[in-house]
Length: 392
Image (cartoon, rainbow, N blue to C red; front, side, top):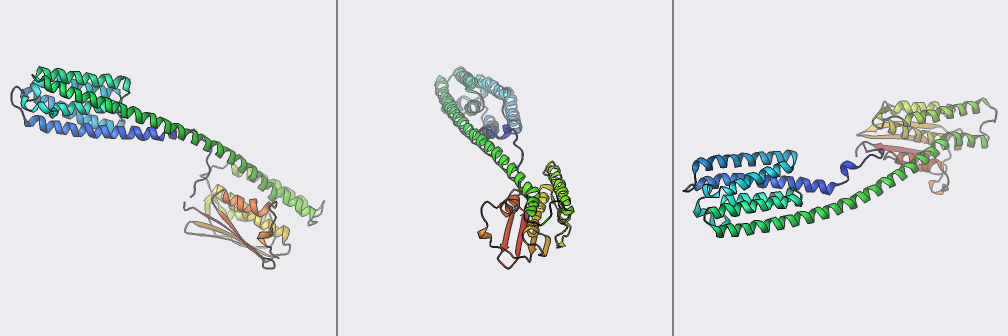
C-alpha cells in the first residue's frame, strides 16, 4: 500500500548519512586489512626461523598476533572500532617491534619486507583511519619508535631509518586523507540537514494546507450542500426533510472527526462505509453493487467521502436521475464507480471556483495516492471512477 503522510518525527537517526557511510567503510576496511595482515604474518613469520630467531618466543608471538587479528576483525565488523581496540593493536604491534631481534631473521629484515614491517604499516594506517588525530598520530609515532628501536637492536640501523621514514609517510598521508574526508563529510551532512529541515517545514506547511482543504471539503459536502438545496428551493425552510438533513450533517461531521483519530494502519470495510453513505442520501434512488472489501481506514474514509460527494452532486444537480454505485477489487486495485443518467455536463466548462469535483472528489482521492476520472457530456449522464491501488 502506498505510504501515507506520517507526523513529523525527530530526524536524528537519518540526519548524518554521509558520516554513517564513512563509519561503515572505515570499519569494514580496517577489519579486512587487519585480518589479511594477520594471516600473512602467520605464514611468513614461520617460513624463516634461522638464528637468532627463537622458536620458543616466535611461536607464541605469532599465535597471539594471529588470534588478535581474528578477534580484531570480528569485533570491528560487528561493533565498530573504538579506542580500546586501537590501543590494543598499537600495544601489541609495538611490543612485537621491540622484539625484532628474536622474531625476525637478519636476512629477511632489510628492504622493509619483513612480516614485522607489514604489521607496523597495517597498525599505523588503521590507527589514523579509525581514531581521532589528536591521539592516533601519537599512537602511530609510538609504533615508529618501537620499530626503529627493534631494528637497531637487531643490528640494522639502515632498515630502522628506512622503514621508520616509510611509517612516518604512511601516518601523514592517512591522517591527512582521513581529516579531509571527515571535513567534506561534515559539510555534506550539514547541507543534507539544511535540506531535510526545509523539507520538514514544507511538509508541515503542506499538512496544514491539506487540513484546511479537508475541512473545506467536509463543509462543502455537508453544511454548504444543505444550504445550496435550501437556496435552490429543493427543501422548505421548516420542513421535516430539512431538519433530518441538518441532523445527518451533524452526524457526518462527528463521524469524520472520529475517523481522523483512527491510526493509519487500522483497517475498515469499504463496502460498509459506502452503505453508510447511501443511508445519508435516503431520497436518492441508487442501485448498489458492493461486495466485501477491506482496506486501510484512511483509504476507506477518502473513497467513501469522495463517493458521497459524487452522489450528492447527483441529488443536487440531477433531481430525478437514477444512480448506480459499484465497488470492485482486482489485483490490489480498488475501484468505485458512481454513474447517473442525468443531464450531464461538460467538465471543461466547470468554473475554477467550483469546489465540489475539484476538491471533494479529485483532491480527496489525491490525499491517499488515488485518482478520480470524470466522464460526462451534456445529455449523456455522468460517470465518476474512483481508483486506488495498494501496489506501490
